[in-house]
Length: 230
Ligand SMILES: Cc1ncc(COP(=O)(O)OP(=O)(O)O)c(N)n1
Ligand SMILES: Cc1ncsc1CCOP(=O)(O)O
Ligand SMILES: [Mg+2]
Image 1 (cartoon, rainbow, N blue to C red):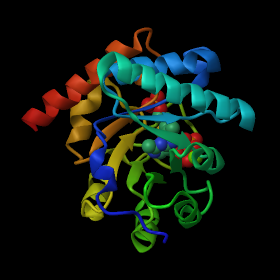
Image 2: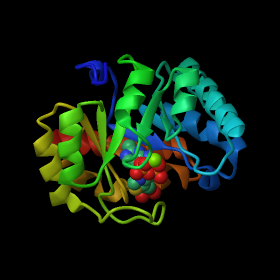
Image 3: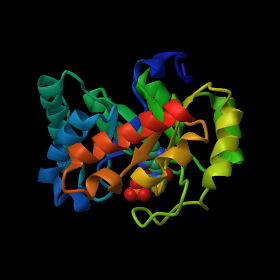
Image 4: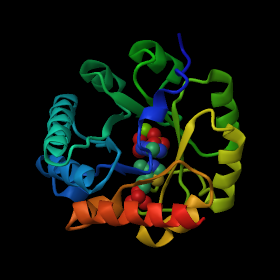
């Protein structure tokens, strides 16, 4: 079994997807608080991303984020789908979803190891990558990346822009969910909705804000207000 299970991703609220950033949070011990606040503010998906922590520290960070997500549930009655960035072995150990880029290993191997009850996200930056994923059908969600250049991550492919993202969304025929990432903030959410994606994915628009709960709530409101009028 290497393909995604149809319908699994329908149970997730993709409208607002937060990706953590340890330096922006002020250190690993501060990240779980950002997760809790973002979920209370309305994030339906949270990805734990740290490019430098050693394995054991990242495992501990991810466990603390699982607890923070549960705390959010106790406080507001909602919790997020948790996604591990890059590190398949951590996702496997904790039974969590994973997000992989094009150079993070074989997505079919990830599907074999995680089974079809967990979500796999895959970064897509161009038509060739989308065609390859069409053939494999291993991913539940595609991170269209980046929409715009962003100082948060500079080792990216060329920016897709809104037209490039809209073309890719059309090509998926809704077989997988799509989220847009890169340079998204409160002020441009409306334009991103026009591409047809299922959600927005942000780092700094939440992680660089002093009140991440409010930041998440404002982003979700911008999404909902714009969706209602697009
Ligand atoms: C939802 C989502 N989309 C794209 C990315 C970028 O992944 P990748 O290209 O592997 O880069 P890193 O995040 O690993 O530096 C993402 N993380 N999430
Ligand atoms: C992780 C990642 N992948 C593509 S762009 C990006 C960073 C997005 O950060 P921001 O939301 O601050 O622009
Ligand atoms: Mg990666």
